Image 1 (cartoon, helix red, strand yellow):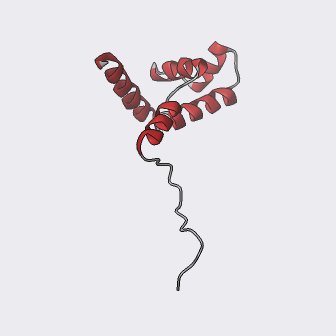
Image 2 (tube, rainbow, N blue to C red):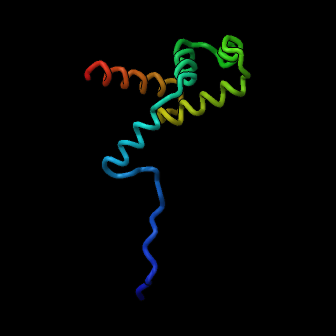
Image 3 (spheres, rainbow, N blue to C red):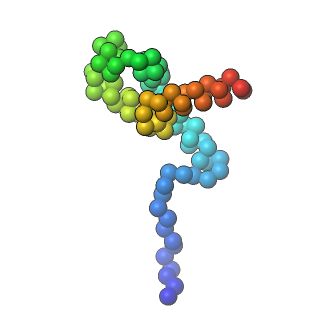
Length: 94
């Protein structure tokens, strides 16, 4: 039995070749505020202290943290340490 409909594949977030690499690079581009919050997180600051220091709400810091983790493909602070260390190595090697 042959169908005239095209085969549909589930999108898993992986794009082949240059398109996939470009998308991965774009995801790692943190905003200046996200960079600031990531740096504070990596230095051990709590969400509450970051919010107080920057004059923003705890919920806003949580939202930035979530965006940082998504862009850096992290699931924990340990992952964030590893990802930023890998980026530093690549930048220094260039």
